Image (cartoon, rainbow, N blue to C red; front, side, top):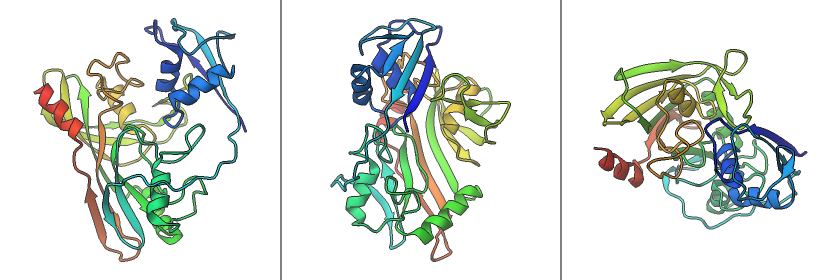
Length: 305
């Protein structure tokens, strides 16, 4: 089944290339090269007209994107290095790098975490999420780094999925946000659902959506930014990004919910899934694993001090 998206450019948008704008606004798994292919194949219009990938957008233009049905493609194992934080017969926890999509999707069938774990696990992965997402029980965004659980069998998958559903999994994130926070710690609450106009984005909504709770504390305040720790009670799509933007402190590098100009020239949002803790599906004992802070985080913190 084909997918369709309608986007309306924001008031402040002027002179941004069509392909770059779409890459920033559409789901992470849709790559810029795939978007350029769609534009070439006349699947994208701006105000009802076909344009080239380098077309410079103006405010309040309507962009229509049609993504044709995905062709049946075998997902193949690939020998991609993995940073494994923990592994046993039931599961593994990997430290996902930046710029890696978790599972294959339209225009993105290689180079994903799934391709890598299929090679590493040699077929021993849960099948509950189907052929395109073997072993995947939860996910983090392409540009978010850190801890991710991979399940090797269906029993483990079901037990961990239940803990995630009950919000009993411990999830601690680190991030760097813009601005000076008035309080050193606090909680953001609010239902998160699809943005009413830009369907790629999430937003705080008054009707519908799902309840979301994020606890935060400031680890270090800089002149115009802050190093933060977040504890999630829920795990909604883009939760930390939406919640922090809603209180005026978007994550640095987040061009979707924050500053589109990206003054620090970062490759996506500065967000790291540091610690994950849960009851092991077989032993029944609590297991907690932490992914080290990525080097680019430390370099940015040093620059901000």
